[in-house]
Length: 215
Image (cartoon, rainbow, N blue to C red; front, side):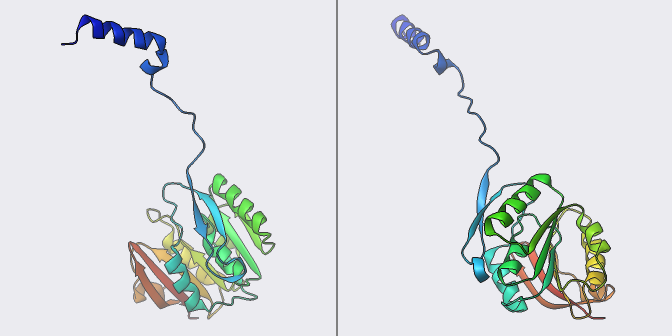
């Protein structure tokens, strides 16, 4: 049990420093952020800040490196769509490697603002950012009008099949679709959509597919 003297000292100290009795509430400094790195092309090694949001999964460096090895490092003249853009790193990698046009589609207004800021910082005149629904945007594209579609939606949503259906119409025969999913898609399921898997990679919980339209 503390003595009366020590109690008086504690009371006196608290009186002199009333803030000591209250928790220190710091003002928020905005959403936390991290950096992504472009790994190839004209903007190689460029780092861009992106905010941290639940469900936002930038494609890891190793997976992106493998993907663009599959595609070939030079995408000069390609028309691309980053359908669930998020951080935009897939679309920016394509633009960095010479793509003639990259359409980034994103629903979240905060992410759209960041995509626009990053495109402006890079002076990426070939990049267009559009706020909207990815599946609807893909479905409205003229048939065979793009060479490559990136599909990396939130894993807990219903977008995989409708996005693949729309993308399969947007690319010509021989065109490419990159898909990230929580499980590997079977040859039978892809065949029903007129697609076949040319390459597949499992990295942690992510299955990366490079798909080609067959007809």
